[in-house]
Length: 162
Length: 302
Picture (cartoon, rainbow over the protein chains, first blue to last red):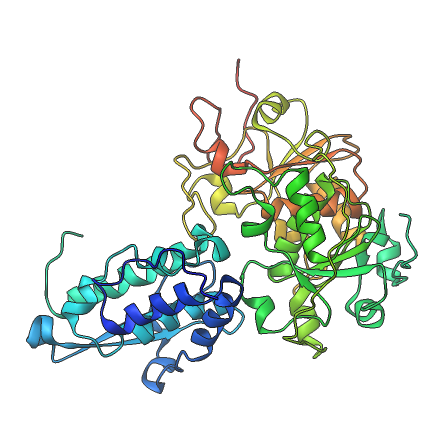
């Protein structure tokens, strides 16, 4: 049975994220947390260059549980075409936060800076989780996304309105 | 308390005013699965239960299950009865709550259950972290409880819950306890350190409120401090003395539920209320008095 009564807008998202949005919408609401948990468990470990230097990561205080992230841009002189790599650190006792990070990693890691900067800020609301997770908890994901976008802008030297 | 489920005879608990409100992890390990006992996990992190929980435990989420979806309020009697039925909880059941973060959210759930007069509600001392630290069994198997016939009980908002007008009238007449962090109390910040901003326009505290951060009541391992230590903190240092009425508040009422539990059940204050509107309400209301800085402050002229 599909739980999707109306599938959220995904045509303005890269394929990787659009797939996640569709997966959540098509998963029965009783199984959506399980899907989020799978994404949490797929979040890769930090590479040693960051795990040994946690000061290089930026905290995300919008999340209820501690999470840190860093955005890397390869060949930033390529501007919008440069490739973005994401790294996250969140403890196992914060699986929801890890799940949000897992979504952003799965959806955005390896995308171009242009794609990363084009992600609409209402992405968390399109994951069909508002009722299951609560809007307040979803704010944490918005906090991560806005930091990823700000760091990406800074790395490629793009001035933003922020 | 009524029920066939025995109290935990741990010596530490016997020192509290009502030690039967606490059970140890050992006790839970021994009694889990007995008819008439329901174990409820209630966490800040909504996925934690799914990663593994005490065998047989059901999950109750404060954000999504105990709150009304539209109004800023808790579910009503019908909503609560439907929730209890879905969780397989009967009116006579003994409920043991446990959760993450030193049982904040577990205490919050226990308090909300108490608004509906569910009689036998207990906390597992030390919560989820202690259970895990002791390498006790966790499972991802979700119980599928049989629905129960839980009666529709009207929520009692008068005895355990305080609203803004009463809190305002209490300034200078009843002790108020502010359980937030020192930075929130002084007004340096409007939310918990390293926590999301939940939108209070002003920082500070309610005039005359004593600052007793909730965590003072807890040991490093999340268990409650001893009766003598709690008495020193609240009765003596915070000056509650023999007060017959106390109101506690924090930011949204979750940390103050932890303090409410301490005052009401462990120290035996008879009329303790939790102001769940807390700072996210008070810090946004036009014209209410606020004090900044470390001093409790004077009763304002009216």
